[in-house]
Image 1 (cartoon, rainbow, N blue to C red):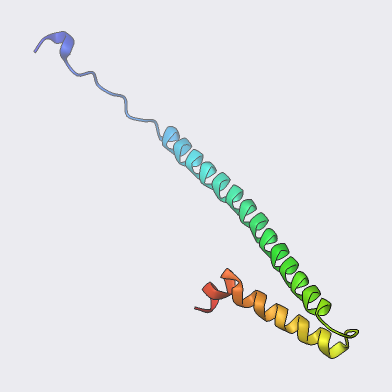
Image 2: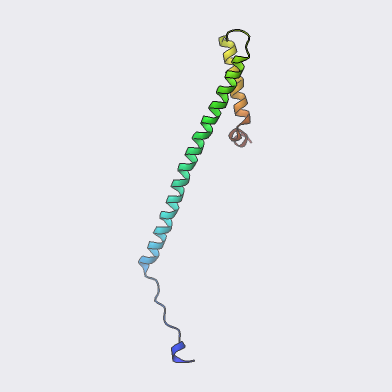
Length: 98
């Protein structure tokens, strides 16, 4: 073998550089978790608002179909049926119960 082709001795990584690498990986993981958490909170809020709008529209439609002024009983019945319908069609309730 020629003298110029001899392998050079590679300096081992210093201890602090390994610690720095793990610290950077931890920081990247923390940033990912934090940004995902914020997105999930926003999505949950959107779902809640959407469910509330669906229940409100259902109650309004039921009250519009009444022939007379709504009574407490008819309003309660309309709210209960709208809430049951919204919960039955909700993806969350299907995955949580089954």
